[in-house]
Structures are given as structure tokens and as C-alpha cells.
Image (cartoon, rainbow, N blue to C red; front, side, top):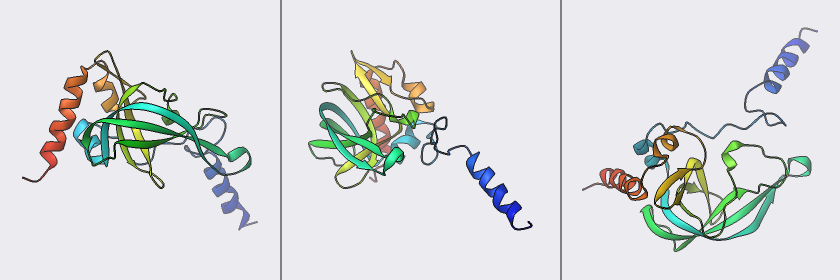
Length: 176
């Protein structure tokens, strides 16, 4: 009996831990959430202004009820803010069909929409948008997709001002 109690306690702590994937639990975003724009720009390996060209069904991972489907979102780069992207990049997003497992997935991308995207490299040729890293541009105004300190400060800001602030942060980080 002495060996069973620690095992049971461990199982209870594991099952009840935040971040446990289940019907009511959402997985936390990987790493710390950036608190300001300079920290966020530094965390991203690639930042672009782009237009969604098309969305294709992508890969799947896992099996059974745990299977996830992904979409490959093809984005034409209008303006490079950080990094050296090709003319078109592929962003991977969990497909919205089926169970939603995380608020970080966000709404599906739609052809024609313009976004500022803060990304990191994913598998193969794909990129993954960071938590609070998607900002829709509509009628010259920034509309964050998802919560976070940087997103809240960017809500309703003029597009040119937001892009200019990102470029200024990138320029400050470059060696002279």
C-alpha cells in the first residue's frame, strides 16, 4: 500500500493540472507571453505584412480522437518587417473542424485578408504564428486576433503607425 499512494497522488496531480488536454482544458501557449512590442519582435524569427492567397488542407497528426488536422495558409508577403521570407510563405494552423483544443488557434484565415504576422519556423517549409501574433489589417486599422498585452495595446491603432513601430524596434536591434 505504501507504494500505491504516491502513484495515485501523482495521477491525481497530473489529471488535475492546468494544461491537461481534455474536453474542458485548453493547452497553454508555449513559453512566456510577451509583455511589450520590443520583447515580442525579439521573440519572432519572422514578421511580415501579408495577404492570404489560398488555404489548403494540410497534414494530420495523431490518431483516433486525438487526431489533429492542419491547414496550410499560403500568404503573399507584401512587406518584410523582420527576417528574410520568400515571396510566399506557408503558415500552418490547426483546422477549425472538430474539437477546438486551444484559444490560440483563432478564426480560420480567409483569402484576401491582410495580416501582420509574428512567426517562428515550423516543420518543413511551414511557419507557425506565435500566441498573440496575428493582427488583421482592415481599413487602415489594426485588429488583433487573440488576447495578450501586445494585442491589447495594438487594438484600433493606425496600420502605418503599428508597422512603423515594428520597423523601429527591428532597426534598434541591428548592429551598426
